[in-house]
Amino acid sequence: MTARTQRHLALLGGAAAIGLVLAANAHLVIVALGSQPACAAVEGAAVAAKPSC
Image (cartoon, rainbow, N blue to C red; front, top):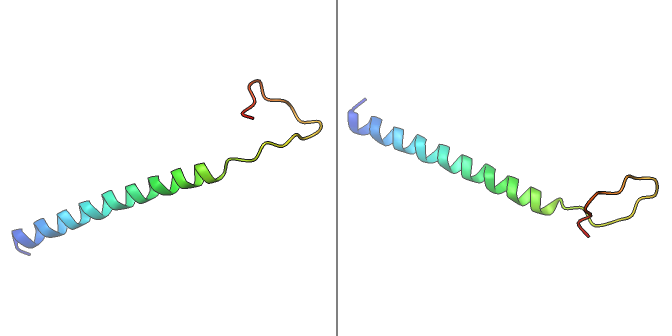
């Protein structure tokens, strides 16, 4: 394997790793924003000290 090929493979692998990390972080943000439960009173449940609604 030539040095040029090795360098290109290393850059491609690094770019793929960075892309994977960015995609995972974007997925976590999307899931976190989409999973906010609606405010609903549940009988017998503990009340939050500082309710969000």
